[in-house]
Amino acid sequence: MGGGGGFLPHRACDKALGPQATIRHSRAQSDERTAMRPIKPLALAAAAALVSALPAAGQVKKSDDHCRPASGVHMVDTSAIVTDEFLTKMQEVGVSTVARYYDYENETITGKRLRPEELPLIARYGMSVAVVFQHNNNKAATFQDWRNRGPADAREALKLAARMEQPQTSAIYFGVDGDFVGPPGRGAPFFTDDVIGYFEEINRVFYEENVGYTIGVYGSGETCFTLIGEGLAGFCWLSHSHGFTGTQDALSAGSWDIQQYLHGTCGGRAVDFNEFQSPDAFVGQWRPGD
Image (cartoon, rainbow, N blue to C red; front, side, top):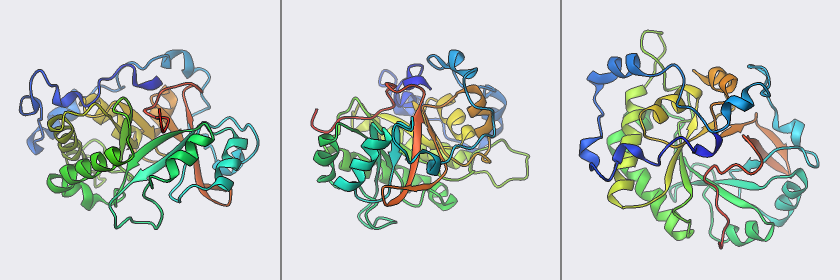
């Protein structure tokens, strides 16, 4: 998505109209949404020029193959607290952005939740931070409970963003860590309307709190296509699960802002490396202390 240049942050809650004029969640609209959804997402900045340079669809990039100096990756995501030793290795690899998690205090993995003391350490290495909210976002039940989880997750994310002094010119991603979004009639247990409802609630809370953060989505190609098409997200972080619905299409079209590689080990821990459309692309990251 080339820095999200073609999308407006949380557009579904356009402040000129108010949230109630634009939030449209209704299970009765599912078939209509699917019929009206474009085959491809909106045009992305510089995507057309990049398509020919993309690897063939189906080619899987592995984090283990990039644990080496100047490997060409742009971002690492980790569910553990960063250390000097780890960041030294990431600097050697060529990482410019560290992605960490927002989560509740009862984090699903010990150390997963970003700590304030990590920020000055990351800044000392000249790196930026990207954040994604996830708390059991790999379970369909999270999205089936969208009326509660959407507002609660949005408020927790905003609370943590304030604590971290995250600038409102940046983004907060929310995870859809499963093959939960797809067209009806394929026999798969999709939860498209529930995911849409979850993001509508996040947009509503961001609107009511009058914040400027862009909402991003981590997930499948179809999840990105759907939520960006609905005006509910402005950045796409494409999951490494290439078998998920629409992901091969997104890879072939270059329709992503961040592409995640398969899990690996580097710097003494489990990591996922990621790439941007270009080294200087803006994907909602921010520099602590700026």
